Image 1 (cartoon, one colour):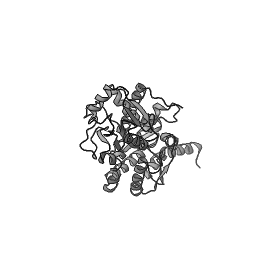
Image 2 (spheres, one colour):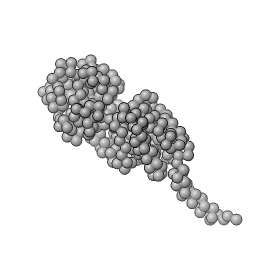
Image 3 (cartoon, helix red, strand yellow):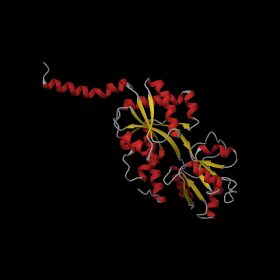
Image 4 (cartoon, one colour):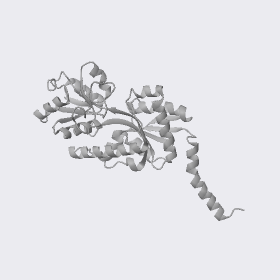
Length: 326
């Protein structure tokens, strides 16, 4: 006969061994990736490229679910509140993780408390561009000449963004602060209408996404610099902002992977290793390179990068006085 004490010990041992057993068997059921942006968006595209590879390597279906709204915050909140069992995964962007917590005071998640960061998948720089047919910037050929024009005409040059508090907005405010120039912000409802405004002469400059490459190649936009720490392979002759003389300027928009906080570290490691293997697969990597530079820091490195980027974003937002009405 099993007495109460033996039963209690058995239950305790079972509970203690449960996470280890699940980690050893992981994955044993389908995995759901939640994306906070619409189908066809860059982050959705990256998630689907990776999910296709992971379905093969992990031996379980990896399904992408789009849960849009609130600049990715609905999806992030859903994953933060999910069971930490490794079967609900967030693919998110840098704005949702490093900018939103500063801008939105009623946010329902804190990235480094509510998530287990796994890794980035791709990181993509912005491209600082001007319109060569715009008379206000027709003599601008590099970052130095742009700053010279801006300093000579405080507030006259206007720059676009994909919305107030968007990472493009933050990047340009950081440029203003580092060079002590005054420019006028014109927010748009997305990067595509911002680019239209740039081509029409409605605005004078912008940190564009790589979607502007056809306009650069056609000579309709002039690429002055890229915002990342390394040159962009598609623009090998275009310097980085730091090469152009702007110290400590490294702003990229990335796609990152997260699980709920409390997920077994062995599960996190299994998923991380599967993503690393995916980025090393030639066919998968070729697809990813169309979206950005494949980069897979370790979970520890990724957490440290998030801490640094969040601090920089908070300082920039505070210095610029950026406020979101709620």
